[in-house]
Image (cartoon, rainbow, N blue to C red; front, side, top):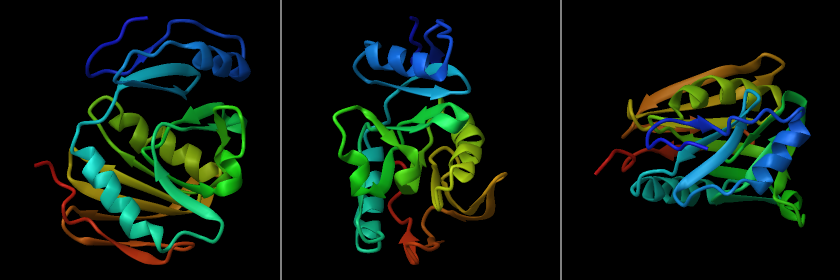
Length: 196
């Protein structure tokens, strides 16, 4: 496997099924500082986020925590959510899911348990965050997808999931307030989201 500093990379193997990709991903020895996901039939390895992204993730979690649906929890960290119907597996930066999703001894969590996902773009993941993940999360029925475009310094919230993806979106530049729709029904203050 070749790993490049600013580009996602695939393993170069072609397991015969989504389950085969999941097994390969589970056995993959990913180098420190890299994350792996399944995107469009490939295992994609990309570098972890920049340091200040942690501050942004904590600001988002702090603001959402008091608005999460009952029985759900907001968290960030490397957890893999699986969408077998579309053969995708993502490790979102921030995730709000029903607590029952984590009651497993495996490392593959049910993507249908998600009520919100948030992604912070990087140069290597931005295209997939803006395209493949928007469609996948929407088709899977995830109520809210929050995309923090760290390169353009703007936040977009996608809502009203449908068979085509999301039917609604709202974008604001960092520093402004962004409405987060139900089941959260709150406003996200994006002050402090820009690079130091």
